[in-house]
Structures are given as structure tokens and as C-alpha cells.
Length: 166
Image 1 (cartoon, rainbow, N blue to C red):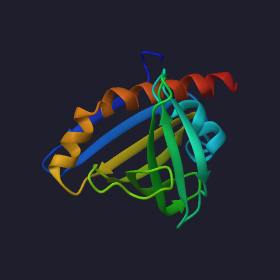
Image 2 (tube, one colour):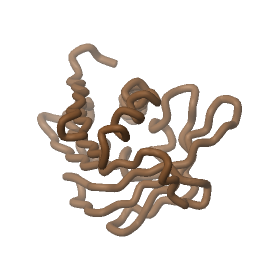
Image 3 (cartoon, one colour):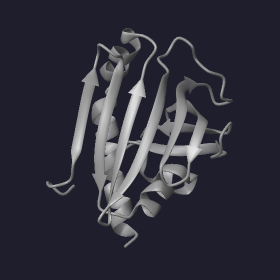
Image 4 (tube, helix red, strand yellow):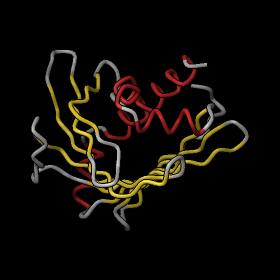
């Protein structure tokens, strides 16, 4: 990752939020595609050596993405993202939850609501991500599971994917 790329990761426990601001050296059309097309998401979403594997994806309001994070020993952790609102090339909101391979939500694990906003500035794209949790314990559990480190690794994978598309 280039050292001059904007990367801010802030935990706001008072409001039960994680806020991430991340810059990518690519136009918004490419960054948006990487967040919204399963073939591209599968290439960067998981922190190495893990892989993301999409079972189904319907990127539309009311649609969802069902995928597994697959570990190096073949272990699978399933998640479901339910899309709420979409403003093409600008933003989307979604509910994120752990689930089984059929998309049935696991209520014993923390869920969250995501708002992703994309802004192009002189051929670079800034992505603002706000993740909101219902309970502080859900935010804390997510951090304890290594979310910060894993998400930063995934975003670095996205840098590599975008650079390979040039």
C-alpha cells in the first residue's frame, strides 16, 4: 500500500460505531464495481490467506449477498449482507450478519448496519464507511474477532486488485 493513501479507522464507542475513511488510487467506477460485483468482491474481501466465496448475490434494494469466508484449512464462516438503499456510484446501505450456508441469520453473533459512501476526487476515490451496532458489546465483540486487522488487510487486497486492472 502506498504510504500517502488516506486510511482512517475510528471507533466511536459512545455512538456504537466504527468509521473508516479509505482512499483508493482509482476512479469511482472501478472502486464501486469492486464493492458491488461478486466476481470482484471474491478477489479482495477476505484477508489473506482466507478467501471470500459468493454463493449468491443480488445487488439491488431488497437483494442480498450470501458468502463464505473460507480459511486455509477449508473452514467456512458464512455472512449475509441485505441491501437497503443504493444510489449508483455514490452510496449504499446494508445490514450485515453472520449466518449459516442457507442465509439463516445467527442471532448469537453481532450484526451491524453499514453505510458506504463513494466520492471521486481527481482520479482517486474516497470511501467513507460507517458501521453501526445495536449494542456496545456487539461492537466490542467484532473488534475482538480481529475486524480492524482483517478489514485493513482486505482493503489492501483491493488496492492490489485495482492496480492490476490498470
